[in-house]
Image 1 (cartoon, rainbow, N blue to C red):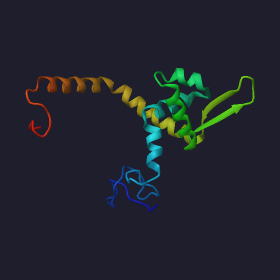
Image 2 (cartoon, rainbow, N blue to C red):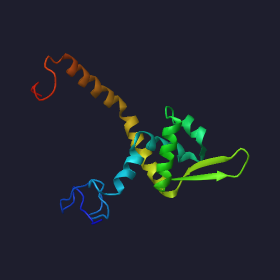
Image 3 (cartoon, rainbow, N blue to C red):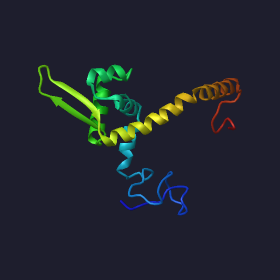
Image 4 (cartoon, rainbow, N blue to C red):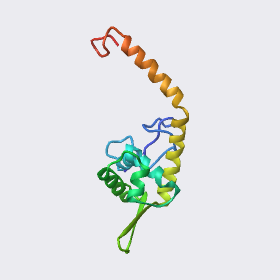
Length: 152
């Protein structure tokens, strides 16, 4: 894939912050980095990576840590993250078999960055909740429904 400039660069490219040129451009539909970004930032991917930051976990330990994830979704998430090189799966030949999941170096770097974002979101929740209340009050009290015909 050709290199592309990022938004904010002097070259005026199409992406986000970063170096002047990169081999991959997640903003391009055909870029192979886009599915990986989806795996990392999806509902269960980010929580799974964050849960593994403190060390290896077995499947059921991970499922308990990531409250609300189904067995099927956790399995699919782990397969995708393993394929992307973010999670390491180690099956131990014991009886019963033991499978541990841990972060690879790439997974740890990614999880650390995600945890910083999670921390930001958590620390700013009072502002988010206030904004949501204002929005909900505005839309509930509006006489005209939103949309093209409503004039908004």
